[in-house]
View 1 (cartoon, rainbow, N blue to C red):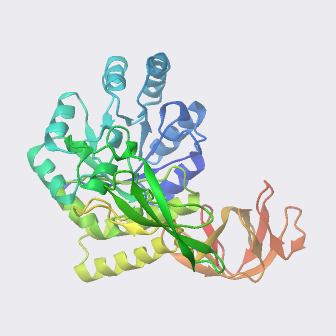
View 2: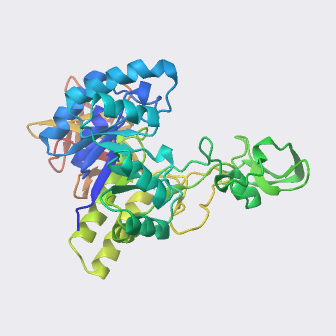
View 3: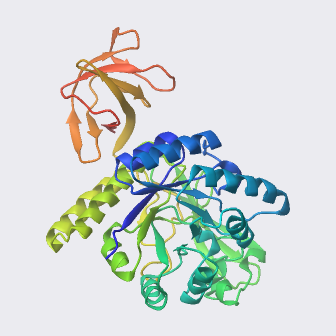
Length: 425
């Protein structure tokens, strides 16, 4: 059986390096003009060149996103970008627009093309169609269930399948809204849209208030009903508003063996806008479980590793986890927009060492009495601070982020460059 690929996001060059260090086999990234991540994306053409060199030097792969739906004014720039990517020898281009795919085939015929999840391939006939267009890999729509993946794999050969296993879920996407299915059980994706986006809605507020998660926070109960009384739902509103289009995050850590056996060859993590710390923890968790699956660990040991890594993922801030559409159910929704509180705070990156001192780039406040852990690609190690020195090597009691100056730390252990440091909240 083909080796599973763990594919991680890279929002910038530094995050790319952490993704590889913490276990990714491949990374995906893109410049803002042609990627579906315009904000919080610092990649430039110069960065892409450095990224390709860095990734290939480590015998890993890099895929570049060119997955916007282009208008006429984009095409000349896209043509030039394709030619640039050809010179870099990226391992694949991720695209969704048929016009862009045609341009790739015209200007770089040998290029490996991966069909973006934005193209919404949800059935074996669509997969077969895209295969005939020269696509090498299909990134299946998040709405595809496990049983459907099995059928797609059974009926289509010689094409790779990729699936999102972790990260944010969208409520809807252009032309494929799921509001109709959710509100009236009439699927727009099957031609039966009840057009709830065009309904008028009114609200009825209850006079009493309840106390929410944070002390003193008032929460109003509201009933939202459309103008013809076809659909109603109860929601809650606090000082931040209501969140009835807000989904939980996807977490398929416990289902990787099933996905592999169903025929998925690449497991994809969402999160180019996330922090390096988030990326490291998530990538490491999936790496450990994939390794357990591929080395055929016994069921008891696999279960133990999954449990340990689930706990690590729960240490992150998240919206609550669900299995998305994988098991054939509608995904859960986080109506109250309450985030799972983190048990740790990311506080620094280990940049290098000087004698018995470690040089850290500090991201958040560290005081000498904080309880720290260092995060490596293999494990978490408890740390004790012996001494903190500022950039002039004067001893201080605290270190703060928000600037470019580095701090010198003497710990009870020597740390490897590239490790991350967190503190107990």
